Image (cartoon, rainbow over the protein chains, first blue to last red):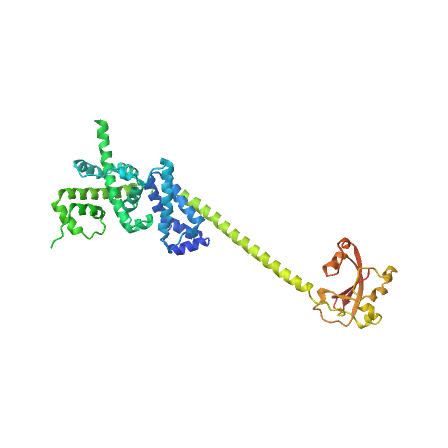
Length: 196
Length: 222
């Protein structure tokens, strides 16, 4: 793969607006991976993640003037578009699911089952189960898990991408992780219940 | 005085500790874990979850959009670029056409409003047989009796009118008169009043040509 690293975002965007195809390709290679993975972690669907990635850069091609560097970074701008498209895809797929449905969920409580859960999580085959649990989280919690835990973004970066305060990210992540552990416990117990 | 952390406080920072992020109360939190099995368990879970999520992220394929997406986007980029360029070119053409129209209109108005010197190309040889009253007579497309008699000489009763193409031509010492036949529409183009119904008719005229071959004036014969 070609090394797409040269040039600041502003410089590349200016060149792109003047018709420089290579500048557009550099912007694409700089951000497509993160946007694609975010959409994939949110939807669990590679086709949908492709669609989101394509829509994000189509929007950049069609209306590059919409980006204002005074309001934030190009990364945050692109992620904002990607996030909106992702949420729309999820709504289209599952109907109008309320984005703050996490209030109905039981959070994790430390107990004996957690010890078995920890053993299970330590095994490689638990990855699929973990993905299933992440996918089942309400979108506002899923997106902080996707950004902060799966993409390992800092609270500040995630706050910029999701256009909210750092404190909001921190509290959402805390709740999301609690929900995730609870979900994992439920998934862990499910085969035993079915069998017994 | 030693700061004592409560389980509630520990619970609010456990994810920061597990994710390895910056945490001001880290030392106090680790002291608390030593004396609180519940919080120790909670920290272990959070750390394991962090590890499991990292592993899941590493194993989550594909990590990037397929090359087909880039190919489609580059096609779209080229289409958009061509569209923008075409719009810019169209704007330039429109602006150029408007500017040319304005220049043409201004030039035409100046040309139509210019003063026409009546005797510029009248040579002494030609002026001598003329009657003073007839020298100031305006050119006309009405045939003169002399022309009707097929005699070119009476046409000299009217004077030559300067041609616009010879305005900047140098003065001449020798001139020659050539009789020609031209469409009335050609006379209209150089400023003669010709009615719309007669533009297709042929008109006989004398052309005054200088020694340099440049036509200086015109005189309507018929």
